[in-house]
Length: 173
Image 1 (cartoon, rainbow, N blue to C red):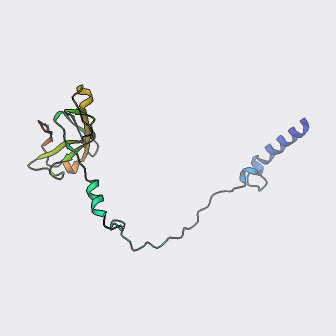
Image 2: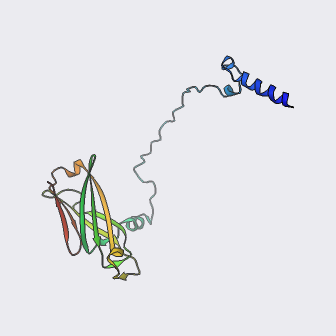
Image 3: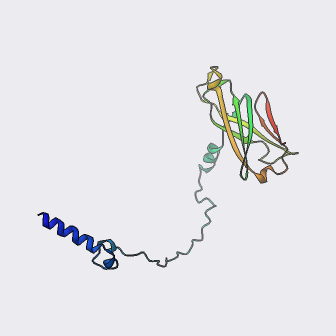
């Protein structure tokens, strides 16, 4: 039995040795080298993927349901503009009167365009159905951020974030 194991081990080492590298007997060559093969190209369909194909009675209701339903946060407490390659990240923190706000966003006020060198956003959030007023400030604090490119920042001297009670601005140095 020991001889059989030794013979099989010697045979497998011999088959995998360099002399049998390209041999069909070598189990390491059973799948061979990969080859490149041409791919048949399918003709593109005459359908524009940007035009929706679904139309119907409830299409308008779906679009209205997809619209953001946020309301402005009460007070904006912090505004930071952090430089990143290719633009900046605008991050705003605010405090609301009630707890449980969700889907916090910085919504552009002027369609994302600067007016007289001022880029303006509203800090908005959705309020829950069951409002829990009050509570510690840490449970009422929300933060949102938006990324802007260098092209968006061209000509911008001031970035402004508006809440219900106040607005915070950051000026370019």
